Length: 151
Image (cartoon, rainbow, N blue to C red; front, side, top):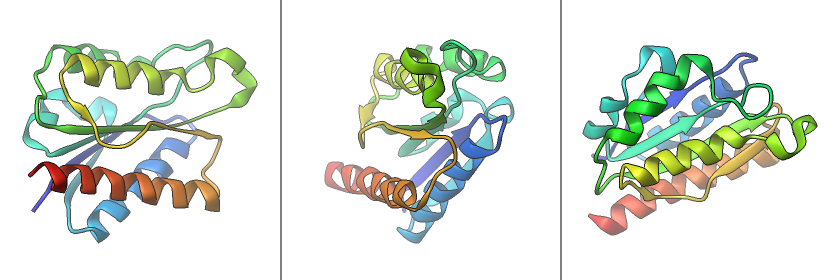
């Protein structure tokens, strides 16, 4: 059975919603999933999972979530060779060039840890609507398919 670790950071609840949608879909696809809030999670948890997902928010002008800074730093130092990652976050297009920049930063951290992209990053404006939910379900499906193709 594939295992997945889904970690989210949220202020408004949007990224928790995104994490819930991804977790539910991964469970439907037969994965054993652990979902946790980033301040309660440890980056080393990813070492025991096949699929690693982060759902971060972007603060102000492109800042990472304060409560996720240690996690982000620890993530970059890991060796996640053979793991598949996905990053999906909610932001606000109001911030223009800084829109959802944490998604890019976490994707880069996973790459630095030698993890493989299991699905393209997803950026959602504000709370997930029906189209976004379909996109997130497809994202989860792609993560599982990438893993299965590899094993």
